Length: 296
Image 1 (spheres, rainbow, N blue to C red):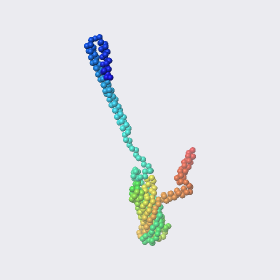
Image 2 (cartoon, rainbow, N blue to C red):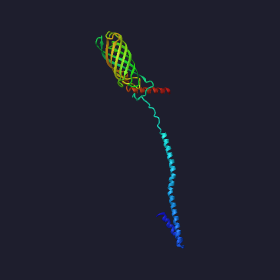
Image 3 (cartoon, rainbow, N blue to C red):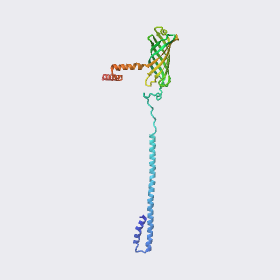
Image 4 (cartoon, one colour):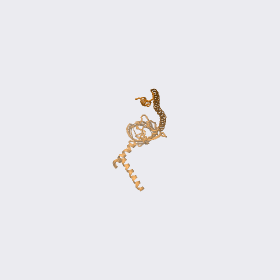
């Protein structure tokens, strides 16, 4: 039921009942006045109820604004905390074998040492009597280069040679590595020296010139100064005093460390038993134990 109707039903009967002894005109006048008062009261109550949510909404707006300001301040603090930090510099290890990923050293020029033992065969030419020749030699090179296989290398080279037990030759000169392919350069060298010969088979003792071109596996070693190499070679040997005393040789050169150190380790392992690395570890442990006993 409407609140106004309820109020009129409650007010009008009681008013007329109280005024029952009075004339009917006075009762109507009093009833009309009470109806007006009831309407005004109802309107006032309605206005009060309608304005109450508006007041509540108006009072909530400053609180919401304060909350938004606090949230924006918190977001700014988080943004400051989450600012990008400088990335740490990469630490390079020995496992970084790719020359493109390694940093340049303070001194870009480094030395790589290569030594090989070679076996060759060939023939004498020119004024010498034609005959088949076997020889063996040792060759060492000290190459100055930059880090990586793609760089030009240059350095001194040395050679010791013997052929058929009739000649002993020493030569020294300059070698150049041409980086035609990564890990597989071309080795060109020119040397001069002296040959001591027992007989006139090779023209007698004389100063000599040795020109060699070789190619094969020879990669830059990022972890050590020793450069492992395995090559085939072609060579011309000539007497400087008798240019027509010639010999042409070709053969294969094997890395000296692989040809000597590896067989030595195999022999040691066979004689003593076990892995050579295990033997070295046992020796280190024994040495540490002895030092501990001396300290006690």
